Image (cartoon, rainbow, N blue to C red; front, side, top):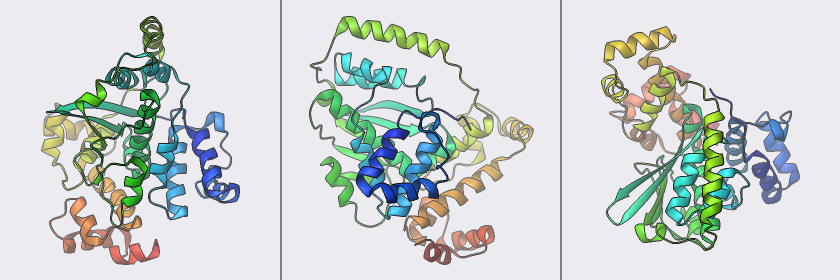
Length: 330
């Protein structure tokens, strides 16, 4: 896994101290195994782990979203490019393009659908993608930054979260003043197109052109580790959830490979489609059950034909039934 410096770790840590108190925040940092991590050397993986443990230890599912909504200011080059852009859409696309030198793990994509536009945000690294609280943090942080750039409280049509969430979600909706839809096709924000057409008061064409030239230099100078096939396969499998386990044929086709070629290349990396799919399902099952989803919901989200099949498989993996696991992690 690519260990990338975190542009937000210090913010998350200080915000936890503010929201939960210094003692509780220190206990979370300790539980996450991050006491020895210097803030200047913290990685995105450290940041994600801190957020994951903060949600777990505080027993506040919406905490990751709350942390994201508090992240309204950034001093990165991509943030300055956004502020100098002509429209809100141009600002978001600028961030999406110039984000990689400072955070190569996060991807922002735009899709059009009639009068709406969806801004999808997700982690490139499979392990980060399976950290569900961190995915919530990213999408709410994107909305918070957009509000700062726009200079007003934008109201999206909806905030969409790909993974499931049982129980009351009103705490999420109060944060944004819009519907929050769990179990959606993607994790992202849906806006009316006219909202992204908004011109920015901070637009400066000369500054924007200068900053973009600097950004292109940073991109050219940044060295990117080549992604392994196993990582590509894991991300492709993850993209099928919730609700479907992609077949090896579907994954191979998506990656432009034959099934035989993908199998051979994965063997060269000492793994297989079956091993990767099983590992992802197990990790997600533990995550979903640990977050309070029912056995029925979890089996559906992971694409099992029935609850009985999922329960039997989970017991083979862990030695305990899903219900036993859920009770022990409450």
